[in-house]
Length: 62
Image 1 (cartoon, rainbow, N blue to C red):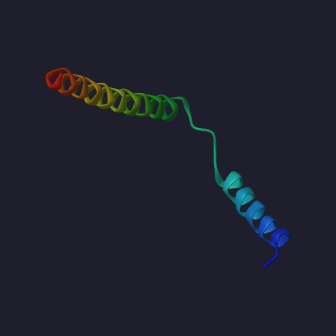
Image 2 (tube, helix red, strand yellow; image 1 turned 90 degrees about the horizontal axis):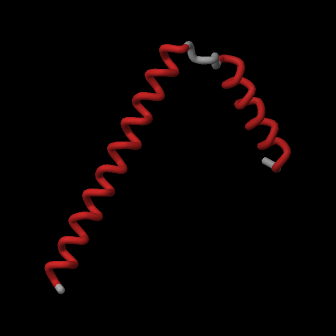
């Protein structure tokens, strides 16, 4: 397959996805926002805890 036919096939797939998708209502948007925010906070907290543990290990070695 050449580049043009691959591009056309990919664009056709994109059009299909866009045609069946819809805008979320307010409740769906708020739920998605809460879940995403919770994920960001949890990942940040894990990173912070790892950083604290690393600092304590370095200080105890010095």
